[in-house]
Length: 542
Image (cartoon, rainbow, N blue to C red):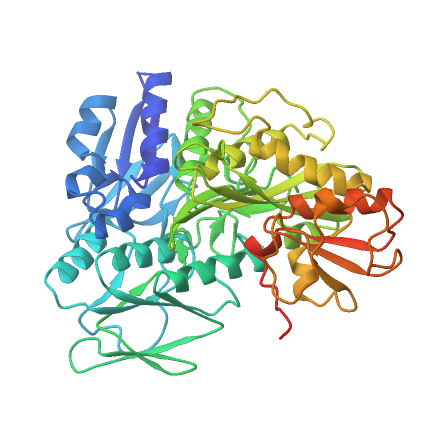
């Protein structure tokens, strides 16, 4: 069997290697447009910042080493220009010469390319993309040459923020612009994105959201970046405003697509017999909603590439799909993770949504390096199904994210996740695991023992008419009356039992304990501010 693979980065090389392991007799040929294969695209921003010192560390395999390792043949700098599914051939061009390649099975793993906006000035010196090792090398060389002191990064997604962080580490002053209302749009709910923006500003990186990129100004090289609000002085522009699938060559092939992305079934087959698709050029399924989903992630490419390879070799594996899972290291010394549905997405999907935001210790508070996680959990009120998790913190956010991946993938309810036997030792976790702690807060809210305002509700004015009460261990909110939990032994002077009281502390825990005590003594109108002052901005009266 002859298997032709179009594309040689994550998905293509994973499929090729697995096919050869499954059936050594298969003839596997990779046709790839670039000169590099199997490179670490997700590591490019860290090469810019010098975290990854050498270019060679970005290249997982050279074409030659990959061929020796797997037995697959690799043809680099070979661009596929057409696919004839009736004749089972593809047309490719290598250094100006056209050739035709036949196949028994075809894998399209052609990836995606950076979106290039139609604006003036992109031909100026010091306009960069961030998609290939050469892109990262060019930007780092320009920075190290001393010619870039100020930069604009267009795009507030993962790559844009990672590039911004690494440029800042190199001493470059950075503005990040994005047309969306917040950075990390569609990844985090707005109030968490706003928290990230505040951390960026604290780190000297200026987020400019709700701003359109309109052009680049300069005499031969970048001097200013024109936005819909103003022109921003800059020595460089880095474009990280999204990617588009490389599928134009499939026109007339009969392969079904949606907005340029190839449609596949759960076996990763297209609508055309013996043609498969995988990676950034292909659509998969959201395993939670069962709707089509585009997941241009290295993790998806590798997992799906493996499944596809087994199916080509006679298997019948299904790829259950994605959950929108991701983690990232962000400017301002924080990390983020998410899986499943955000509150925004869950409401759009028709769920009866309830959320809880908690600030919890990420390891034993007395252990060196301990910090906090901000965890927002989403569930369905009616079925009590666990729907999603978002997390911010200085520590290992991936661990709580991956627990949530497992929970959602198995269709767990919040009750089934209660009291799980998580690992504990002071260097790693807390006696009640951070995930379990956040889950307990959600359960308390769902069961009625916690009555609270979410940060989003608070920001929208839901606490209007409530009297702000400081419930911290020590008075910390100027001008707010103070309630000491340890001294509440009955009705408290100056606080009517039916008065609307908003209880606020640093993280929310002490306020909850205060609410619990007040309820016992007949107070009926208290609310806790989730996340406390650690997450929310509480305006104090003069």
